[in-house]
Length: 179
Image 1 (cartoon, rainbow, N blue to C red):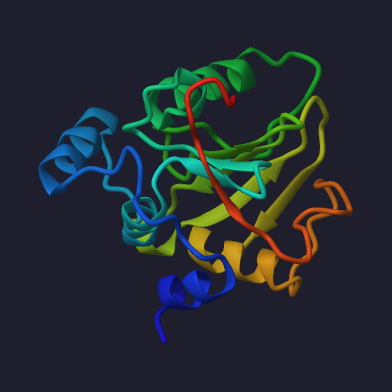
Image 2: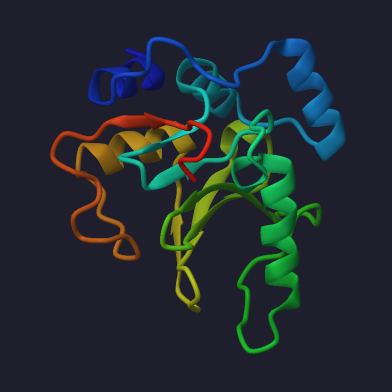
């Protein structure tokens, strides 16, 4: 069973993926960013669209109309914020530098999840920076595999609240006015 199909068993997708686009739109996004994006991420967005796991972990979407959930707009803002830090050491270079961080998700608590852009996008790992703090965690997983392990509680992220995810996690679609 593919990772996405397994995730769909654990976290049922909505009937329709909101703010999901076609290959032509993805090509424009990737040219704009200067890199391909992981296939599992594109499949995840095609299946789930804009939204969050349990209304807490928001997957950034380059097609989101809400700037705070938009991969390009919010990604740029998060990278600029990291670049401006003077009292905290960032243990990774920032995208577009080799092996640089590129934001892919955010939490309601201000935590930011990044891809570590090293090698082919299918090989990118993840790093999470706690909201308003210096702690980092690295995971040698794709985004989809991370979500599977998180939802199945095989993986506990100590930066996230102890009650996340819930015992019966749901995917909450983004609706205007909800974030």
